[in-house]
Image 1 (tube, rainbow, N blue to C red):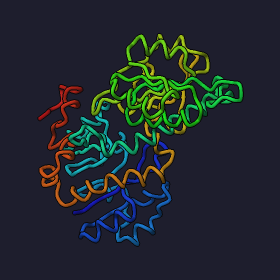
Image 2 (image 1 turned 180 degrees about the vertical axis):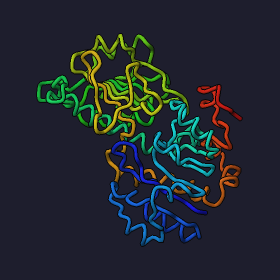
Image 3 (image 1 turned 180 degrees about the horizontal axis):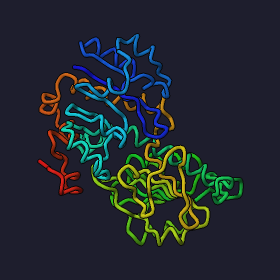
Length: 361
């Protein structure tokens, strides 16, 4: 199969969808691999390494005009003209992005999304490593923006001798929330986690003991904890669907001056009412007296780590798609659940529900 890897164009996106090692394995299997010039440079994977692996270095059009296109982030509007009736494998987050859903339908693309590949137990194997990285980054970015020079409360996350640490509220105890929680606990913060699932809260309590307070999430509980928070990490995920809004504007308006809110769910529309996507170049904005950090590609800040973690889990699926998408769909139910758009129709139920006017099957 002819496989292409375009260079990522999202702001400060440093990841790449295939490593030289992956390219070497695919070429050894008889596939043709084309890498857009400079695609791996930001992750410190130079073109020469791909050439040595047997790949061809091409321009933008050459990377997209392939049977199978591998990316990390969803195509941005400037890339819609490059979409065609081939196979695309990347993060899509379509339920929060109608223009992209429409562009994929119009192009006749067979589009699989990393974030909706789902195992029988409900886990998301391709999203998990990025969620862990985003959760850990949420803690460090939140701590950074709490500093006085950043307009924050001037609160040190671990505190100081005789001075308590920052109050950190994590909303959502899934993969990303748990990673953020572990990070802030390790840093010495006063942490509380809210979740709807009492079993998940019990698992958190078993792991962290008295270092973390657990609360069943209700609108009243979220508001109460938010008003006492220095930092809120929003990590609410409903696979394939827009994130629910759990912190209202009215609550933010009453929060402590200089408090910080980090929205890990921003790719799915965000879980705070005031959330809107930001970039690594311009990561924050103010609402009332609080700072919002809503970068839509947080793991791009650590491209070398993120590329290694992502390609480790995506590569088996890449091999299956390269051998034939139709056969891969039949052979692997998890991959079949990742199919979002095919032959001009929306195939993922949550996306069809979000955009009922688009053709669906």
